[in-house]
Amino acid sequence: MVAPTEDLKNEHGVIVKMLRVMGKASANLLDGKEVDPELWKGALEFLQNFVDRCHHTKEEKHLFPTMMERGVSGEVGPISVMMREHEDGRAHVRRLRELNEAAPGKRNSEDIARTVQAYVDLLTRHISKEDGVLFPLADQVLTPDDQKELEEKFEDVEQKVMGPGVHEKYHHMIEDWEKRYG
Image (tube, rainbow, N blue to C red; front, side):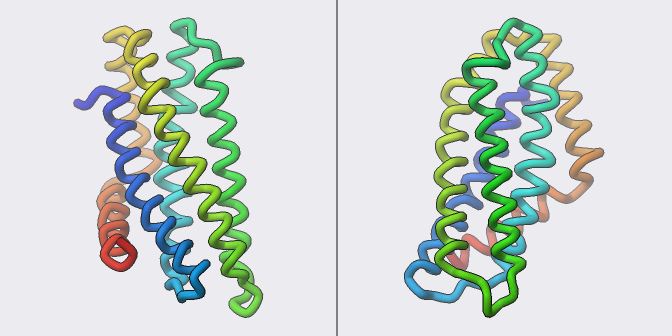
């Protein structure tokens, strides 16, 4: 099994690939180029399922509470910042969904591009903070028993929340979009 923070870092690698695709596609929109609407549909599914339902669930329901049990504050400091940024990210995703669901003639490419860019910027900084500050802190405060319990809980999220084959589906989807926008 992989250590919990390593599992989360590995997921960050997948998320960063999607963020790059989204960033390049939004730049294309701002340049007046067409972007396949299926990209935004796939991105929204990925953001809601992989990022929020899987990755953020592992952090919010399992890692953060365990860290707080070990004395890390949830009111101030890294955990509170991460929670606030998760909520900010959800707001961007809701806005992108609204824009994407607008009637084709009413879609505003500039609004979509700016919303995507705001989300990409937020999550890029967020991932850097988690990898550089939060996860090293977690590795310091978590006991070996905590690590093992978190591994089991993360696997449970994978099986019960995501289901078999979902990670692979997203990996393939991102690879396809990287070929087009990479």
